[in-house]
Image 1 (cartoon, rainbow, N blue to C red):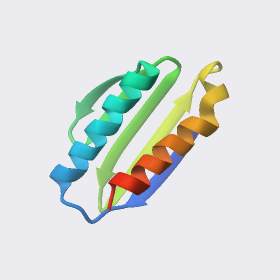
Image 2: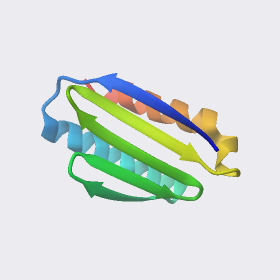
Image 3: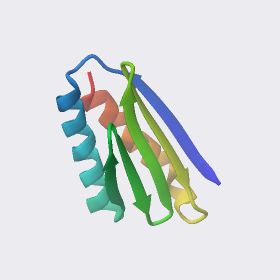
Length: 91
């Protein structure tokens, strides 16, 4: 199974970080048809061959994504999209 993992340190307030994570989840839902579910400081993203987890703890945002066979063809652009979003929205 293909996938990727990204981490990024953060110093912004947790509530702002949570809002940024929610915007990313909504963007992925709109563009890729995935569903999101919050559990504490983690958002689970699933659907369309994508199974991901975005969590934030100890000053680090951690994004782990597993891709099914068909979704693995989009690994590079999906990873680039998530990485660009983290760099633009997380401080």
